[in-house]
Length: 229
Image 1 (cartoon, one colour):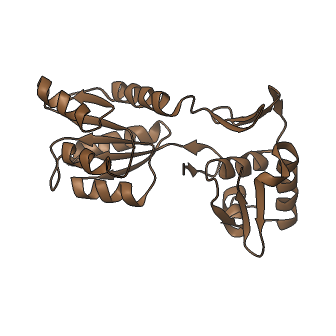
Image 2 (cartoon, rainbow, N blue to C red):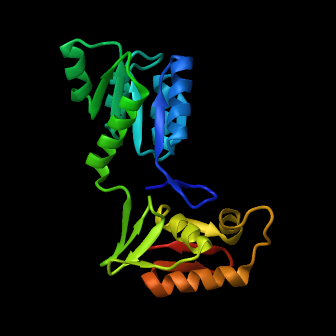
């Protein structure tokens, strides 16, 4: 599961908004962005299918009446290669339309008009149902990372980590098996006023390895590091 990690080390769940009403699309996108999600928006069905094929998302908010492919057709295409959770948005509220949405693989169904707060609650409910407790990332037996608190726990006790170690661990945990160059890591750990320090990076890596297991962070010679836990 690939998730964007910002400069503060905070993890963002990624949502695809598919809505051809430009104003509504913009409103939903801005609202969810303010609530901590990374959001991509598209305006027709074909772009939605291509986006899911090319990128990783945690959930899709999908309008039914769309150009090129309608929402039900999009869902049917997606289910050929993806289990991405889908929340349908539509002005259609007939029972047969609701049934069609679920039949094509929808996880929830909202009729317009709707409140943004209700949409947020439904998104969070679907994610809890699909992904379980998304605030915890299990690292090993008795070791987990709490996304909301940005804290590492071992034997139910908080492990003391520096801010940069938290950022680094967050980057690895939400991008498993992705190779990061040292320069990319420096961009996450250091702001423009700080000078990147490779010796310090090695210290951060070794400290995290000693806590979660040395085999979980692999050094890629002359390139960088990857998390293989």
